[in-house]
Length: 266
Image (cartoon, rainbow, N blue to C red; front, side, top):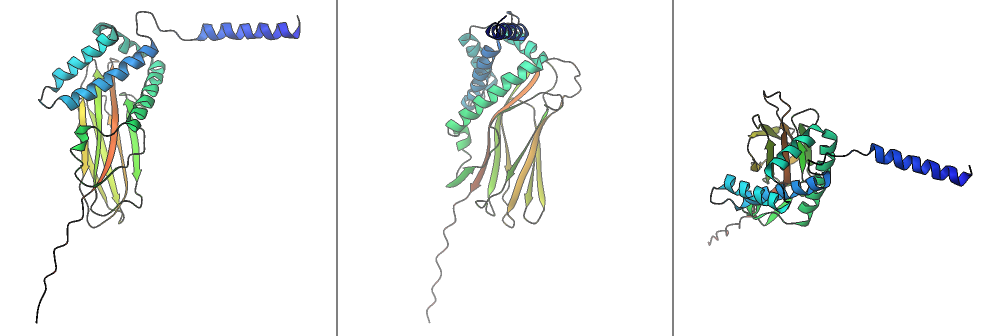
C-alpha cells in the first residue's frame, strides 16, 4: 500500500467514525436547529405579548402569540411539548441550543433600542445602560445551572443621587411545580456601607428592581444574582427559566434651576 493510499484509508476511517459518532435526534422530535429557531421566535413573541398587554389581557396575548409561533413553524403544541421534554432530559443538547440562543438574543439587544415599556421609566436627560454582561441566559433548577451572578463596577460617570433600575423579561417553561426565582442586588457605597434589595420572580413577564438614590455617598459597585429554586418538586419534569432583554439603567435627574438671588438695596 502506497503512502497516498494509506492517507486515503485513514481519512475514510476518520470520516466513518465521525458520522457514526454524530449524535442524532429521533425523527419524532424537532431537530436542534429548528428548535433553536422555534424557541427564538417563542421568546420574542412572549416579550411582545408583555409589551402589548396594556389592557390587562397578558395571558391571553401570550397564548395567542405562542399559537402563532407554532403555526409559523407548522408544529402542534404536543410536538413542541414532547420535544422540550426530550431536550430537557438531554442536557448536552439543550445547553448548546441555549448557548446559541443567548448569542442571538445578545446580538438582538445590541442592535435595537430599549423597548417602549422601558422608556416610560426614563424621564431624565442623562440616562445610560451600564449593563455589560450578557443580555440573556437560561436557568434550570439544578446545580450549577440554577444561578447567575453578575457585577457592575462604578466608573467616573457615577454621581451621588443617581437612580439605578435593573430590568429584564422572564419566560418560564414548566410542566409542573411552582415557579420561584430570587433576584438579589447589593449596592456598595464609597464608605463601605451596603444596601441590599431582593424580590421573588414567580411569573413570566417583566421584572424591575429600583435602587433608591443616595445623595451622601457614591456607588462603588452593584453585585447580585438570580437564583432558581427547585422547590419541593423532586420530579424530573421540564423546568426552564429564560431571562433576556437585561438592562441596568443609571438615571440622573436634570439639575434644578437655581433660584434667582435676592437683591438688597441700601
